[in-house]
Image 1 (tube, one colour):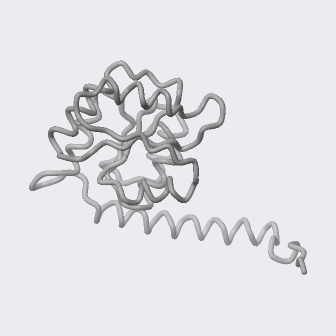
Image 2 (cartoon, one colour):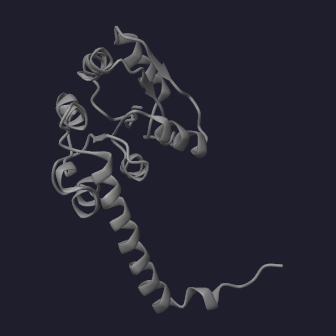
Image 3 (cartoon, helix red, strand yellow):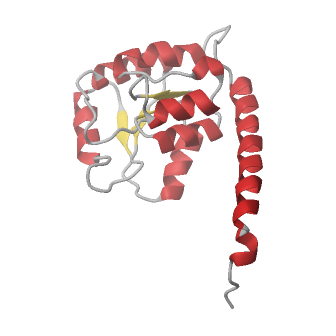
Length: 178
């Protein structure tokens, strides 16, 4: 499954996606994480698929649950969105995030929460080399390792939630609606 912002440089993307289709046998599905102005563009996705030689699909659903279903059912997820990265992490999917290598919110999330051998932002031309770490007889990145870090993330989040929730006394301030 592939997602990227409207402002994303797609010059090398059709060739890279064709290469991935040939090496994996998977069909590329382009999907939107959000279609607010300046975000994802179905038209841009269609332009990329027209340049590809291998089959690809542009899924034009704009329903958050259907988007989550695309991510959860994918063999791998490529995106420029931090939220898509997080969903791929939650569903233990091989993931490549196209983002600046340092200082971005993507990089901060990846370095704080993700498995140590998955702590990388990439560019389109590095997509296959990152993805390839998930496959083969001795993968450098496993779903089992992702699951370990996912579980650690849930524990850290719940500890933080209890701490801050207690400080704010949220549960006693919420009015009941009848």
